[in-house]
Length: 100
Image 1 (tube, helix red, strand yellow):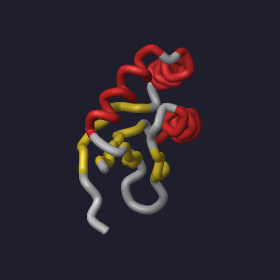
Image 2 (cartoon, helix red, strand yellow; image 1 turned 90 degrees about the vertical axis):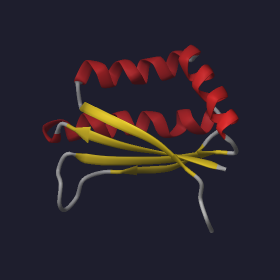
Image 3 (cartoon, helix red, strand yellow; image 1 turned 45 degrees about the vertical axis):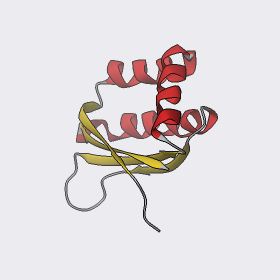
């Protein structure tokens, strides 16, 4: 199993837009074969950092997800919403393997 860790720098004045963006992606990742573990939004501390975690059985399955996502109209609409609202300043993506 591989877990994608996304760390977002968001515009704290556009938290509502980012929350909408996040709610769009949870079912999309699930529909395209992943397990979404949720988004983690600012509460106390830094007001401009958000996280997301989702898993796939393997890195190869994640790559298939990326290909399907690129061709999926709902995924493209979600990406467009993020770009249009500019709620995301930047992000970084890392891959981890869970240890239970």
